Image 1 (cartoon, helix red, strand yellow):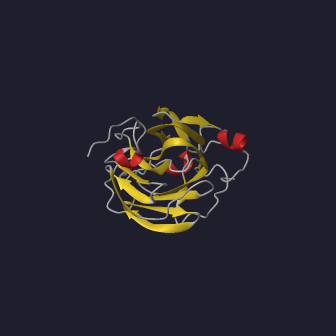
Image 2 (cartoon, one colour; image 1 turned 135 degrees about the horizontal axis):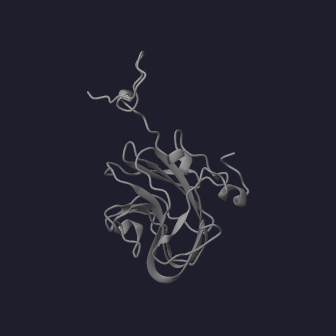
Image 3 (tube, rainbow, N blue to C red; image 1 turned 60 degrees about the vertical axis):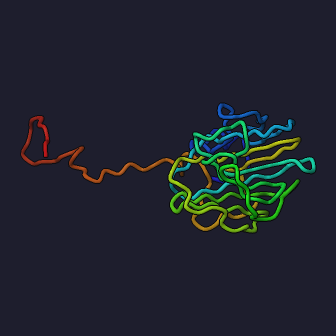
Length: 219
């Protein structure tokens, strides 16, 4: 069951769901199997998750659990080259949605986008690696396509915070609060694992009748 609600069971499943990465963390405090994040300083810091997205359509949710008025939460995606000691959207390879202002951010530039969000709200992130787009949802309502023509790269789910606040991330370990858009999948190793296809099988195996000795194939 991909939506098993027992977190201890889920952690042992072979599918290997994504989680926030304690080894790729700029200063957030992680708990609950690296799915809960908290912050208590005024500096912006972010943390990348454990599974990267290159192609495919991926969905995850970030729930704002508690916050102090005026403080920031910025979920989104970030490539491996992006800094984790600033906001997600401060990076050229970072695409994010800012809680306090409702703005979208990339390359340290913010622009008007959607509604602001706060304690109790759930922000869904739908990244389409096939078409280079990302869309954010507030409590299941699309805020529109935030970015198009995102360059091909490997992007990781990422969350940035400043001030005193906490949030929980769900990559599909438990039922999503809101249904993913059609065709979008939870982020786990089973879904993300590429399937190796041999376009020319004769490069790897050759069956010829009447041969009993070892032989070498060359084109």
